[in-house]
Length: 354
Image 1: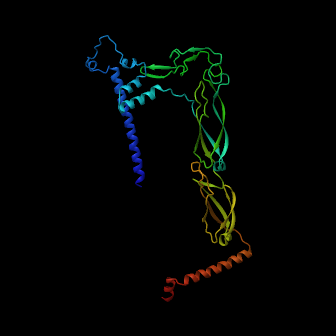
Image 2 (image 1 turned 90 degrees about the vertical axis):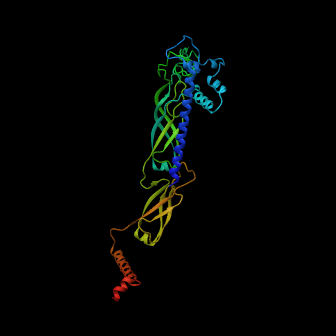
Image 3 (image 1 turned 90 degrees about the horizontal axis):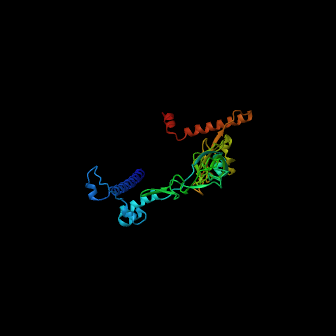
């Protein structure tokens, strides 16, 4: 009981520490940017509000002379953990291009109990965005005229000094097309159907999700296709009842089989198998078949057990011969019960002698 809460609490502290460290880094970055834009000198800081001498001094002039990345120059001129964190955060956030992904798709897939237990391969149809057949996903025809992007002037990137990011107008290509494909209206994709061959591992259960990368909506105009998420729904079975990796089966036997014992066939996930009925088995008694259960997807090589629960069936009608035999049996059982009660029973002895 102690290990759980302590472990959870320590993880919570670690998360809080990481968040505080990140916020502290951002605050330091903000302080540096504020200093850069304010000139960073004591003279400038003492100037009265509203006073402006008409001159302009580029706060980043000491970086411009290098004709280089201002963040890299700041990193070279400053040492210590702060400069490392500053360079890491802002160079990664503002200067690296980010791949454009198409949207993901979520669908549901119904499986039978047997398909989920043993695994299978399913062809799954679903509605999705497909690459335009007229322009092959470009958004324009092959002979369409290309123009230099007016936003980035063909560079593919735009800058709000000192930050640089991918141009949103041309999406980094540096060119724009004014004559879009009439079929897809320049999107590069059209509505349609997709089919995915999905391997269902053995032992999946309702609520499990299968992730198929780049099988979702197609990405027009150079975007990366989205993912396909398949949520599984497993039907119940008339014979087997699942409990994690274990399965449970009820088996009816006659009252004579219960008394005398014997052998009987029971269904398993691999077909029928013969098991032994213990003599004098009681209603609800369970026989466990080791390793006859399910194999879980995240525990390869491990199989659960099958639990066979006996249900004793008593006949509603008997013939005269059967009745006579049962009456003789009942009389004999009554005699045994009286003998057991009379012999060695302290209460019976007290009543008899008293």
